[in-house]
Length: 574
Image 1 (cartoon, helix red, strand yellow):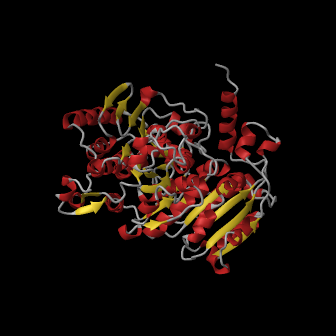
Image 2 (tube, helix red, strand yellow):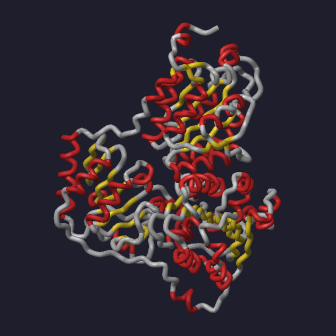
Image 3 (cartoon, helix red, strand yellow):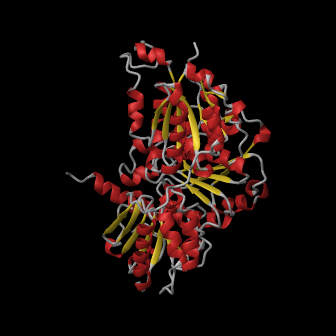
């Protein structure tokens, strides 16, 4: 029976249609996930709303893919089913929360009547508690919207999507099966969501700007250090203008790779304490002022907490405020402050920093050894990359090796340095490649270890199903190299079964005109591969799959030092 409020609606619209139209409005074009009986009717509404259903192999992979899609597109969505489905995605959603990635997680729920009566349904814990899984997600979501009342549904949907984007973190939307087709006010869609950040208090902002300028103009050799939250909290435009206008030497933390145009004359490389690029640690740590933008000072992002920068010489810019030395200015968002500081810049004292390159180290150039080494490969990769490439690196040798690669302009770097879930990168590659296709970006390139790849290899199937064409490098080095350097050098728990990796596209049902496979074991073969026009071209529509053979006991220098620090920390007693 229809209630009076529903009868009075001038433009009634189903709850699911409203939700999907809001997702479309904020830029989502594809939705990841898996079907389950509590979300099946809701899935019928995707195509009419203009949304493409991806259809992943499992919910964990779907969560990783949604994360990768959001990092390229700006926001993403995943649909799972109550209990068994949503819990399989929790690891990926937690990673997105940890690393500030905006993912809308929609969970198909049993009907409101079933919940009210505490029915002993499948996918429950058998105790009649239908809130237990939502409670779990409150810890890894910036908003939880339970759509149990149709008259509140539109408000809850709008709030969740707004919070997801403004806070750059996942949100959880519970959609009961009987709410999918309930009618709500469609006229609300005529008013777009307000996704602008609230402005800073002008008086506070101007005061902070003056304080920042005072220290900046007094500094003898300042540097800028850009990190992940400049990307996540939409401060890149202000950061780029500040970096270019000021001319101050600029460095990036590992999680900030891709945040700065690395072809700029004042770009100096990656700063990660003891894991820094050559000459970078000395330059950054000798600075009398560090302008830190969007820092996340985690262990792997600082090469084992080996930063040696005093807070007394630091100005921190964040989404939640600005810290000048030991003075805190909460509620003064970095975007507005950076913009005004740039506008008011006077003459600055600047000492130049190191100039990174993709030159291969001399000892590698002179070595007659044909084996592909980490020290040789990553600078050589930098010579092959192209502007606008999307480069995804897995937790392990690739994550640390890419620090030694100087990017062309406008490269998007994707990695999971903080959360560090092994297997993330392959799932993320599927989502990133799909977002890239939608945006007309030609090359998505994945580097993952053989051990990591085995966790999420099924997403090659999803890549083929969605006719995507990434370039996938599986580093074949017989197991978990990063774990070996932390503990268990030759122990069997760090070994993996050797697969015939390049047979997988065919195993997953690809037709012969859908993929190309390669195996490279020497530096010469890498050179030949990079010169292969069909392989390297962004116009090649085939999946390219490469077995990249490297020694089992080789790793980038930054990984070795970080692993050593991790091993020491793991051995500490309280």
